[in-house]
Image (cartoon, rainbow, N blue to C red; front, side):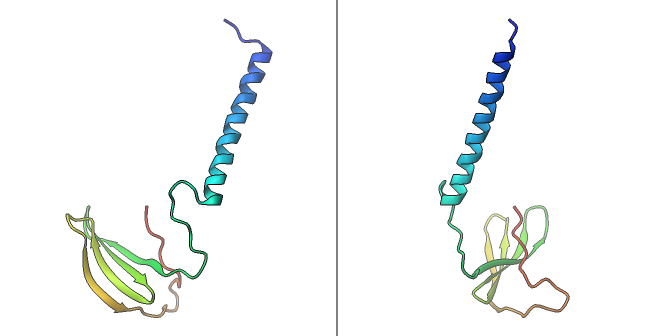
Length: 105
């Protein structure tokens, strides 16, 4: 069964419509905070991952800053543990990024 020119045109227009609807829906979900995602705080950030170091294939040491206080966590083993809490945050050193590292996905 051969498709004529009108059938191809209908197919292409339907495909464009579906892709447009998917893009519009994804924009609306992000814009209005739907979909169960945690809304973004537009104010100053209180929580940041400062540094992550891999110890082995499973375990990592994560330095987390919250409200000017840092906490060292051991994650990835059978049980996640707080290694040290209440570490005073150091000011940014010259030559180092003043922004915290982004959390790896």
